[in-house]
Amino acid sequence: MTQKPYILISNDDGVAAKGINYLIETLHPVADLLVVAPDSARSGYGCAITTNVPLTIQPVRSERGLKVYSCTGTPADCVKLALFQLVGNRQPDLVVSGINHGDNSSINAHYSGTMGAAFEGVLHGIPSVAFSICDHNPDADFRPMHDYIIDLVFKSITMGMPRNTCLNINFPKADNFKGVRVCRMGSTQWVNEIARARRPLTKQPVFWLTGERVDLEPEADDTDAWALSHGYVAITPTTVDNTAYELIDVLKKLM
Image 1 (cartoon, one colour):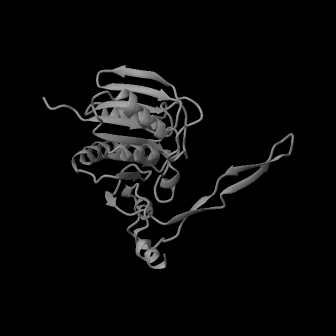
Image 2 (cartoon, rainbow, N blue to C red):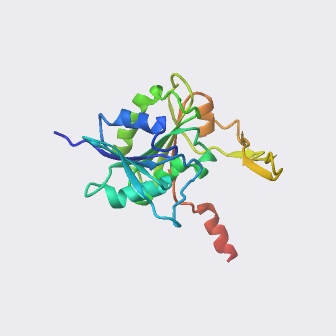
């Protein structure tokens, strides 16, 4: 009997979020799962780690082929803790992060705790994927993603992803999808990001992060932003290598 793949799952919406629990429901029949996720929402935490307080974990669920823990840390903390304390002698075949409630394409990938968990897997040499849907509703409908998730997870395990890379996979909010597009990260920008208000009693000014995202290349049809806006699943191969290679020779001539 062929051994099922071993998958480490985390997210940034918290262990109780519908997205991660749909992911567990979808993958448990076909894989052995270790789930370590934040005890509450950590959206926007990116690759942040906790250094000023100790981390704790609590078991949430345990059955054959499935163990679920909540963690007081960030998504990156969860992956670190899982890899160094919980996996035992069996290295995960894949790190899967999500399913995130909300779009993590283009500029959002830089802030995303969902991507942070995937990046942490990559930094430890484990192929990683992040799943997100363009729907912030806590009760979002993930059912159209079911077959895509299984297919993409197994392809990610078998394809032999290059070191330092992961897949950022975003789904449009739709009852069905037109197909899959492999695309680059779109150039987008957040504008009007700060809203000013005042506390009711003290009138002290307070500030909320808000804003709207603007597509800086709306005519480009090879980006994740275009794919999602046209009903396609957007798969963006992503690297943790931040080197601007095009500047190396320029700088060498100046230095």
